[in-house]
Image (cartoon, rainbow, N blue to C red; front, side, top):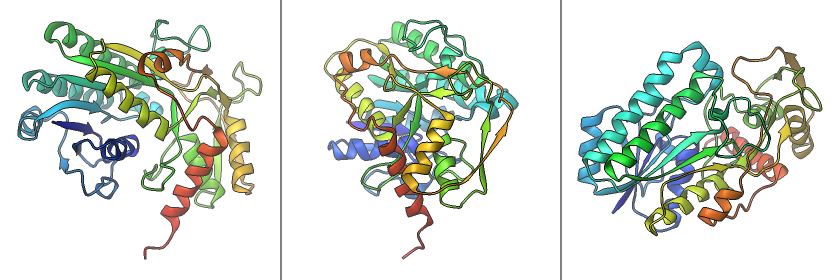
Length: 328
């Protein structure tokens, strides 16, 4: 049987493809390459260039390749962009996911792992935030993901589709072996932007908001290494195969760092100083969000191995240097 990874040519999806191949799985990647890269998919994993919203095409792929599991990453993910283009986000993240879930049900896919987000919590009333806490997103991005969670739960109840929903926090870093990393031009992820600035690829870095109710006035986030996140998905797949019940879980480390703390860590690890500029708050950004992540460890037997901000930064720097290196 085959595992289909949607968004498999993207940042997190490409790490997932590597992790599955490392585990000896048969893997198929599906990506429309709007933000992903065909070279990011290992040669041993076929790449289908298609849109998750093309239900007829997806159903044909599921049947032809005997897909029994879908791990769904394909989505638009930039919170401020979702505020500017809400309908685009609802189309790409929600409508297309509905089509994918429909195809999965029609083709007898047994297990489904969904890439959700901490943005579904909005500005949580308590930190760390737990899975049962209120979901009140602050952006169309968060709502688009929450709607997909609801559709997946209802499809599970109606059709027996077994699933794990993973709500993850701020993903950063790169494969420690240098096989994959964040490669999107103009990316907005803080650590990606900071390491680009440290290496001279940007003239400065902007900090959005210095008046939040946090110790230094900047937003606090829980940063999770992308490779630990890929392993959490692998553990979720093993959990479902062992008969595990549908579940929604946070993926984070349970500790947060402010924007300024992250920037100082990048300066320290890179040995480079760089210009920091300050701007007003961005729409859709909560002040502080940190995961209560004990449930994922308990349910999935997930054991993070790279829960260290300097290590995350070091791997991100190594990948950025690789991208800068001239072609052989």
